[in-house]
Picture 1 (cartoon, rainbow, N blue to C red):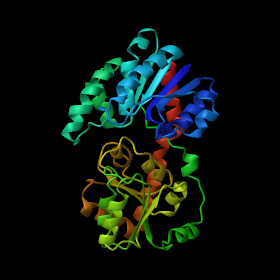
Picture 2 (cartoon, helix red, strand yellow):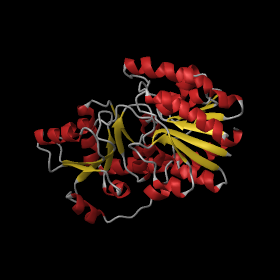
Picture 3 (spheres, rainbow, N blue to C red):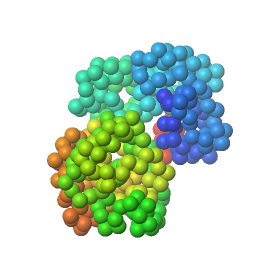
Picture 4 (cartoon, rainbow, N blue to C red):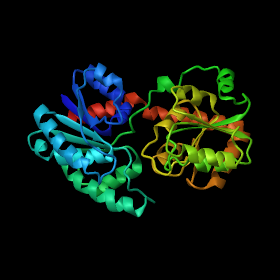
Length: 367
């Protein structure tokens, strides 16, 4: 098969390298269409021989560059004669499905993986007014709509017009990487300037409004714990001001981008993520694979991972008191913490990359 992957910006292709390498090893041709202007695709794709098509997609659905991207994609798909076009991210998916209307009539199949609809229970009204009509209209030009959490799957079955709706457990997780890595805890803690016997909370994710790290920072003000955040983002200066305001400079560490997150999971005690919106969060799955208890926002996706499994605590994203109580309980009750971590490590096997590969392979073959 000849397959085209489409995403809005290049860096998001980092989530699909295992699946694409598997497809290439199976003898398929895989190319990529994305905007690399400020965000490059990982080098591995060029090393594997994937052709990279530059398109003018923007994260904003109202950006005029998307109109040009539709024309670019239409030309690419018709010239290259792809068997399957698999799109990801909302704007790229909109452009792709509008661009492929003619191609579908001559045999090209279009797959869209929704990594969390922007409209969901409790979403802002503007999300429903902007994204919902776009998704519903474009679903008419979709052969397979893949959803990655139960709430989106139920909504897609009821409201969308795709020929087929599938439920796949995210992009999968490499359990060999996050479940079996060995690290010297004392040495790593010294590097982070955190005592070996202290309770260490960890978050991995961008410093932005949606990840909502400020809620955790405020919740630990009177607790004897350390909080480590791995990630960059637009709210760095704001979070630093909150940390200084609460006199938490010694106990809250903003590490920036890290290549050692697998080790950070190992030396932490509790994984915590108070996100306002998620599809199916990869970092939570990685922490679960490492055997850590989780405290996270009570939102879709998280309920699939922690609610169904009862491997931690779900708190309303802005409820600092609920987060404080959950942190205090796990920091004081090590037996409970270990029990929840063990439960997570077993449950996450359902999300192993090999399970997802089998699901995706089946969908492709049916196309």
